[in-house]
Image 1 (tube, rainbow, N blue to C red):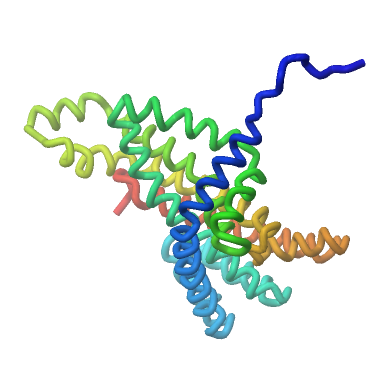
Image 2 (tube, rainbow, N blue to C red; image 1 turned 60 degrees about the horizontal axis):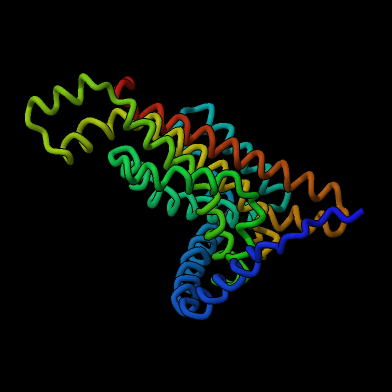
Length: 285
């Protein structure tokens, strides 16, 4: 029995291919320039991290995490990173950490202003939120496809797809945090003659910091998951270890890399959560 409809098929796939071809043919020189520069930045950061002996970097990170998130997180960091060093996963870990931090920085750089705009403008909200719904429901693997023709295989395509995939939480929660500022405080600021920028930077943003940091935390976690997936297009790092283990059916190698990803995720999660608590206006000084 033929289950196909008798009406002609909407050539959506052809339209998308034609659109990508047009963009690639006309704007590839821009994306290639961005790709070369960003790839150099990533390479410099990775080389800088692996230039020093691992024990020096471990001590530095543990002290920094302890200062930002408390003694327990600092102790866990030194134990976790020492284990990764022992497992001969130091360089892949530094590669993954670099990709996550660069991707998160770019996502936050774009996401926070977009969230502020969505909170302050109803028109912008109506435009941005449907885009966020689309970005969050699209399967993660799909973002890898358009990244390759624009940026080629490698770390830059991974960063591009990661930024697109991981950006929605920080946009949504930034807008939510600003909207949750009590109306009484807004009215008081208006009564004292505050301008829109003064209200934003001296009232709304400080009070929204805990919610914004929750969005940053979610963005970090999504970035880590996407960077692992992006190993399929040559991103390397711990995701590359997992992908190699899958291809060779090496369960032990894959499980070992998975543990490394979990340790890195726990460190980043605890640091970002505690940093959000410390930057809260109500936090103890």
